[in-house]
Image (tube, rainbow, N blue to C red; front, side, top):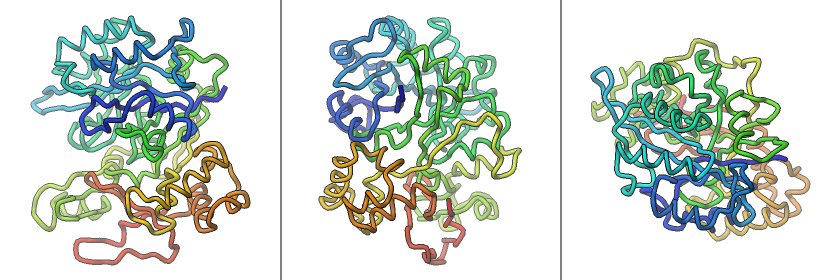
Length: 420
């Protein structure tokens, strides 16, 4: 059975998260997206855990649960804050757990290092290696995955965490870390350039803070499982099993909020080559720039662009349907009735968003929607669009005009446009 899994979500109990991030909204919009399995997120938060226990029904002893015709797997994210080598480290970790009994033991352990009732993603005073060691002692089949691994803030390999390898981050416990989450600002092709990451399975999840289809599932993993169970997913990820992990769905890295280096306050958005020329100092205010994911990859890469390992899992690069329609129509509002109408028409006709984005041919799309929208969907599918890269917390933008050129104004550069 094909499983489309988004395992990195947050509940209504996490900071900066929609108050409607409940099981009902998540299940409903997962179906629209084309996802059939979700991570619960936030199982460490007491009130959310109570709700999960009440509503999720176990499928035997498989470690998988069901609610509203969606499969669920028990997950949470934690933030570890600690000092190592006289430098403050802040790293986010995604955790998969096989059942509620193990969740109870995990939460008891986590509560020794931080207050679990403050935030759905708790902040803990312990190191990354200590976290993994404590979790594996509880249950060897717990998965620990460095979340949005390259992101400037809280990514294990990000600029501000300061680690140059996952072995440096997790030390002797790296042997229990089998995967990394690419995050929105990187994709597998970027990770392929760093040979030390060969051993890790690359996964992609949304880190969604709202339930809309342009948030949940914007990154996900497609599995082909003979048996739907926690152990099947655990083994597929641990063993980097290409027969069971068919592909990941990635957003284009320039669309992510930390792809380029820059300074949002000053509107400075730079390709790494330009940032390096400036010694990573903002040319407008003189402060340090936020070094983006592309620059961090360049710093650690020991392989050329285009290198693909023999055992690489395929990936597909997509944008959320709502945002494709919005950009195609030139509508800038976050919520537009016209965009939603076109969005909903396509989903109603073709079943779900992932089917529209991945499979439906143009001749079928134009029977339902404007040709301009159909053309935009196909061009994103085929990678024939341009992007103005995101930076320092600001999302990138897609540009469908083939003749588009970014104006070369002060503190902006033509190299900010990158084709994928």
